[in-house]
Length: 189
Image (cartoon, rainbow, N blue to C red; front, side, top):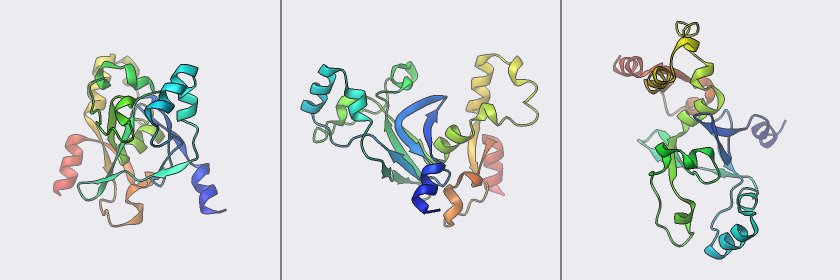
């Protein structure tokens, strides 16, 4: 099986907090792809808004790889426009960073969410609610939504093998959910 076919077979649409990020995909190897168009100008946007076809036009380009940017030497950071997602109208995400680059007219796309690759992979492939620690499995359904939110916010994604020079550093098989205190203890040992 060719590498491209293998990459496409295991790709999933990116999900953050159980909300789909339209037009973005990730595979188990930590490669992010998109079908969103680049560099749309104000005239293209106005034309498709008028016709009511902006979402279809924006999200049906050829599949291309998105590299993201290097963060803290070893982590990869991706930035996603929240337009055409369920997150767009949530109060928590309304006041995020809005770029001012007029050349490609990104400011029209509203707020953008920056998220590290390992977190978006776990949110997409192994959401915390589906991968609870053994001592929480029986209790989870009895907890209120507020308590569940605080527990989830106390969790972080950990790299099982912390050697970022290896090719498998960003692979899904190298990731796990850990409490922030356990992750901190692991880093200090």
